[in-house]
Length: 125
Image (tube, rainbow, N blue to C red; front, side, top):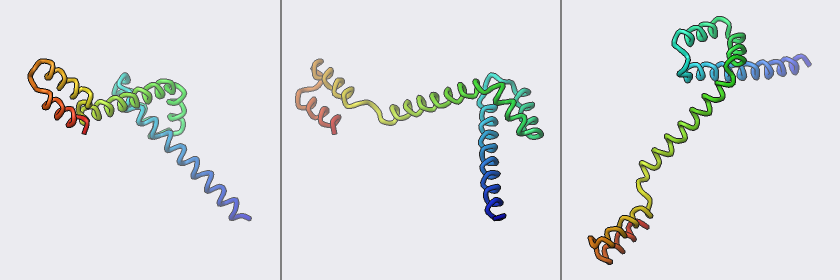
């Protein structure tokens, strides 16, 4: 019976340790993500996290929790937009844009109907 309670204690304490580490890493990431906070303030928070980690993490979440969420959301939206821009840049232009450009060349008389059909087929391929 003693082994059962030791096992439950181990599971519970492991859960608390993992939860604490998660919170600690979130606080540290938020410290480095915050561009409004000066370097001295960041250093003070980091020193406090080293010497009084649990208390400092709780105080940080209470005092700066709303800002943490906003900074996290801003970072996520910035990464999304950068990723979308990269995909657009790598993917190039759309087939519709290529066909429209070829149609403009056809209307201007720069290319003939055969060349337009070839460019259209290439854009759709």
